[in-house]
Length: 79
Image (tube, rainbow, N blue to C red; front, side):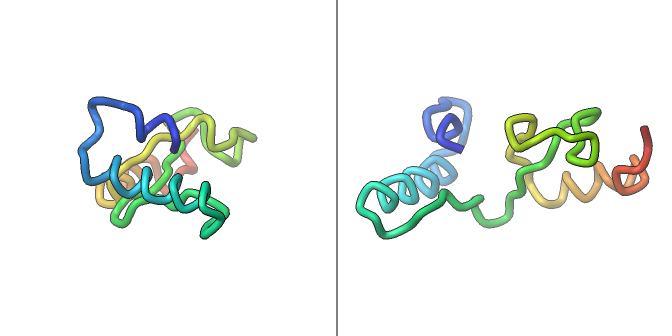
């Protein structure tokens, strides 16, 4: 998530939410960085969590497109 805050291709609203959480962590008001509202950390295809992959293999995705992805891969069961 911290890498997303530095990416130029990400919207300023998303960067702002992530930077706010990072600043709150520095001030000891929060312990983790939250996923921005309306988004999910989704694993890339072929790198699903059930195959033992962690969040390093995931991307920030809009909830609607993530649900569409599961619609076409049988809720992550298609191999």
